[in-house]
Length: 402
Image 1: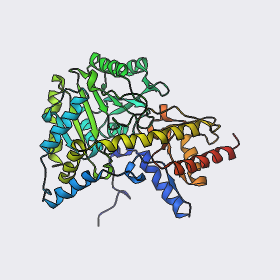
Image 2 (image 1 turned 90 degrees about the vertical axis):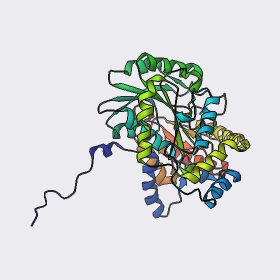
Image 3 (image 1 turned 60 degrees about the vertical axis):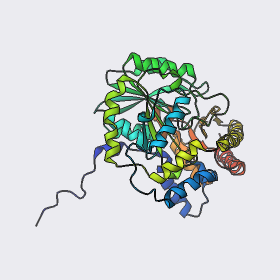
């Protein structure tokens, strides 16, 4: 009889570094909900769950594709017409890009995974804006790398250039940018983007730039990295979940800037697209319609979000014990907890959940160095729901006798 040497079979150590606070915390919320507490969900940045929907012409394009038998494996790189439309969009933002420079993916998450697995060797370091969207650090760790946070001034939406320079080592391979940023709403200016690209060029680094919120900006015109990229090794990530309200359909893309330094990556990364076969074809037809059809819904969407942004930030700053910078883009507020009696931001968020049913996300889930001491609120719900949640937060803090 075989002798069992251990109780469990092993799991890869790489998986232990994978975290996603935005969804991990939902597991606790479900337990609280089972105890009879009504939960007000302010944790996930999904416009569709809060009542916003893709335009009817986009839904019709999806249905038409299915009914006309567009249900087979697509080309691994993506539907040619869609790639052409994406290239046209990104070129209008300044990126030097053509149809063959586009690779369609199953959401930006797959795009990020493909990029990180293609540029990271064990021990390599990747610079991330602090705070950052959690999958960036998780994918870096999953592929054997080390995420390194750099400081960002949330009030002025500027990266700390000196801090970035001080953190570049022989192991650094890339600088990642997320603009507009999740979780802070920071939007980098043209000057800041140029500084970051220049630093990357000086140190022979990739620039990975996520612009999925590119049209969700409130106070100033958005500048894409393409405007300052020149012939630098810029890899742009974008998708259809936010602006185009297609979150559940999972479609994104990689756009390679016209840079000779990207030639080896452009040759090898598409192998990953071929290995995973293809992206959902009917959804690609919907995405094409989303780019080429009427765009009026976008300004209406952003206008409504601005009202909610203004309401939430004003309310947060009126609560003793909290302070919040004004997010310039995306749909998140990232208030700072002053004199936290619960010790950590995670304890604060969990106690808030248990006592009020309001579910937010702890700031340290977006990077402990610069996210700690904050929490993130999604301001996608209607004003009544937001008002209720903010009142509950104020009562929670007031009852803590701060």
